[in-house]
Image (cartoon, rainbow, N blue to C red; front, side, top):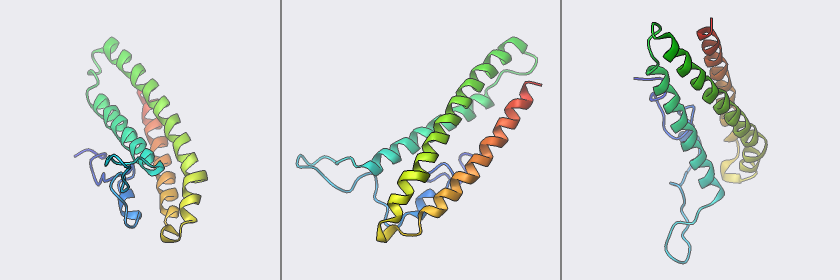
Length: 143
């Protein structure tokens, strides 16, 4: 089993779903037409899902890299993968920074969600460490 599949519930770190008491599934309010209304938290869920999908794609592409003896094809695939990883890491850093600075403080102001955001911030710190480790592996492929 891949490290991505282990414990992946609703967040990149795998335990995010457990931290939010009474988390609704996507949206619990309806508009007048009977369809689900989309709130700000829904966009966060959608963004997390998109991050997870791209992370899974990156993992699949790493596992499907051409063999080292296929030098030209491997070099081309590594270059493309490196570009996607660097872009993904930048998007992830921006997203995490905004959650840490805007979303989590707003959650803390809600009585029923008080003292929840600290665990999310710790998740971000751990995930940042994992990105650094992956980046070190990426650098070793160029040697």
